Image (tube, rainbow, N blue to C red):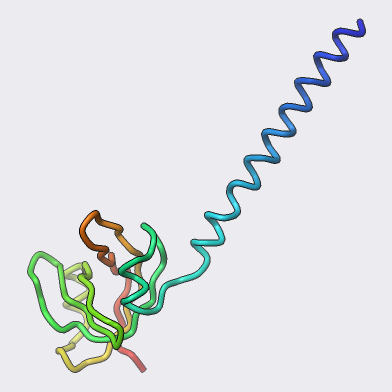
Length: 120
């Protein structure tokens, strides 16, 4: 009888320990995701899937939904759906706000744009 209680106590203890350990390991990833990147220089070194809100200029079209974006800190390649670009009238002197996330690539990060609006 005593061994049954000991076995049950060990099983429950290890289960609670595993749940507590798993919960503490989730927090750093959530904290990193909670902040967004606001400059190109930081986006170029950010982690994959990091949120970004960039203000600057679309200075070149690279074809196939890829564009060169520039702010005061540098340039980065961004991917914007054709439908989103068709909905907004811009040129290289029009300041825009891009909302999206970092696609960390081996050679250079890019930005997958979810939303593009005119800067106010």
